[in-house]
Length: 135
Image 1 (spheres, rainbow, N blue to C red):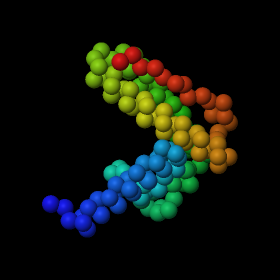
Image 2: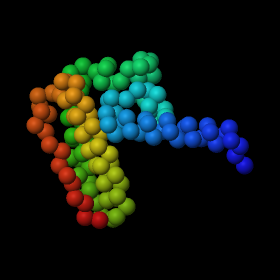
Image 3: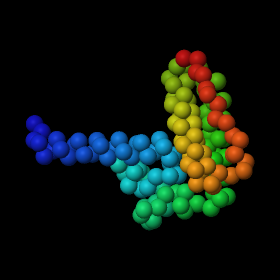
Image 4: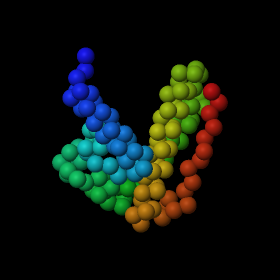
């Protein structure tokens, strides 16, 4: 049985999880701290572990940001291809979840980069498509 102290700790963990999740949704994976990764049960990039209080965006050059954006865009395109060729509903579901996650991350990151005046010219007019899934 849970005592009040343990229940309070669980509520605090739940609240911290919600706050970190919100930061991920609003700023994308490049705009969060190592502690945010830990609070959602994830593993932060090693660079964040040795640079407390910094985000990946703080540590990345303009070229690294562009490479990340292009890589994420490519992952979405590849997952869309896998989705269209998937034979069963389980495969389609896995692709759909990956695509949606990558689109959310890319969208939040583009928004943050624009706010910080760090959006690469190649992505100034980039539009993330609304995808429809045939499940």
